[in-house]
Length: 314
Image 1 (cartoon, helix red, strand yellow):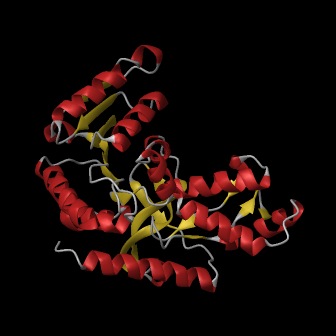
Image 2 (spheres, rainbow, N blue to C red):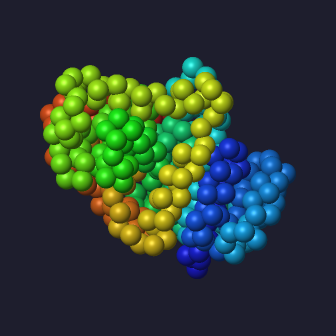
């Protein structure tokens, strides 16, 4: 029987431990189990985070084994090799697909019933790996997708346009990686088309500004990795937002990585598109009215990811 207030995190590295810390602060769960190939690392992270519970939310946090996750509502998979300086997310695929396969086999072995949230990179391809290896339904297995990229986009637009981030409505779609794109055709500031708001703020060369923002969002991870070796705070908060949608059954729209079955003219490829997320996982994929150029960009992402997945021996 699933415990709706229990979450498991597989991978106690920077992303996994930061996600655990963020989830503890949010108070969504009353039980969190950390699993890592390095059991001592998981134990240390669990201890360190637990020592702050007196000033946060009541919760049990501990290092465990795969048998401990069978009743978890959400199983978050962050385990995998980290992206190095000069390395793309897709460069990680061969080694991380093997790690993902071994993890999914363990999840199947213990008959876990919860939702699988894939966070390890390259997230879109690994989401498809998890789907194929597990045999679970697409509503149950999905990735963090471009939730973080979209947050970066909103932040940059808010800075450029001097407007509250919460008033920025825009989304990154496609691959969580180099072929991602901004769906500018329906981006808006509290309902006002982005083009009109840019004029309001005095921007003349709007296309140049939009391209600058797109490149900055796309390359953000590379710049952070170059400076501090890894990214983890932003994705931890993105993971927390996704979990909140599920635990509170919010039916929120988030650009998660999910398997497409004909939407946007794409089939049998997992990539990041706006979808409705609730307590049972992915409820529906939203087909937004993209421009013809944006459709081409989405198909380019899909082709890139499909070719990469097909190279794997899954």
